[in-house]
Image (cartoon, rainbow, N blue to C red; front, side):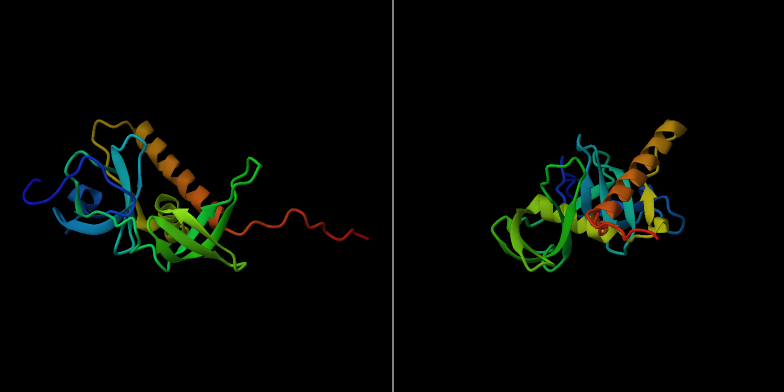
Length: 192
């Protein structure tokens, strides 16, 4: 703990956190902390993405520089994901990713029941459900509400461009995953 606040070595999707939005450099808001939830974590754990309670989304926040602090660990047995829309990957034999959208209706331990529009229900683990909830929340977010954490002055323009491109690709994949797919099996009527 530093100054009575916890700066853990790792975070979990759904953790309630406070962050310096834009490294606390936003004009008129210097040094202010903003509340949000961890939406995703990099594979190496050195950065994460946060969805703020005011609706803004910031990505690539460093986790090891005391710029993000833990407020409350996520309760993986329920809570914030209940009664929210989620999207779940469908295990198909094709290489193309397919998803089903549904509503989180109940939990039993660390398993969550998702009810789909066709009336069926299935149970999934917390990580899968939480990732899908964030995908649904981000799918219609305006670009103006999405920010890249300011990179250090030593970062190259190429690395900044790469991070922005990765986030654009990630958001495009999220939007595509939760959008209904046209039925490719239907054949159009022959032309005369």
